[in-house]
Image (cartoon, rainbow, N blue to C red; front, side, top):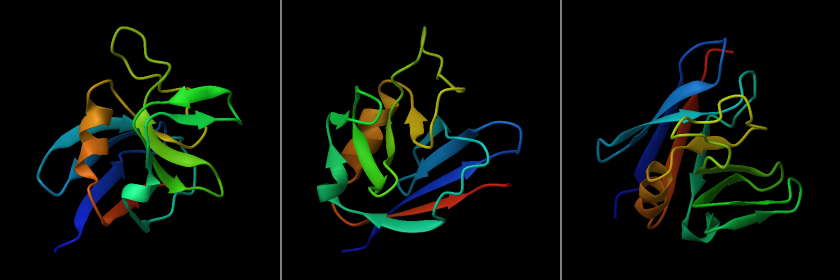
Length: 122
């Protein structure tokens, strides 16, 4: 079985806007934290998924969470601060946020080993 891939590309140095693309060709807007040093290449599995993840650090639930780095508490998840469908771009502490609906699709895409590649200009 071929490993699935998720590629995340952050576009510029001034904000955390980016694009998350699945190996099936689906693409989604996302936001992370500008200047955050994400791991460039990692692998997740079904055991890294949790819906919702209960963050003790921020006392909130993160819907459709996929753990990127458990040591640092970094997840891909549904944005919990969005207003009227707009991502809460200024609020990421390092997690990669997706819009309602998009996060569930990415979450459901991870059905086994999935390689995550992240690039950024900072």
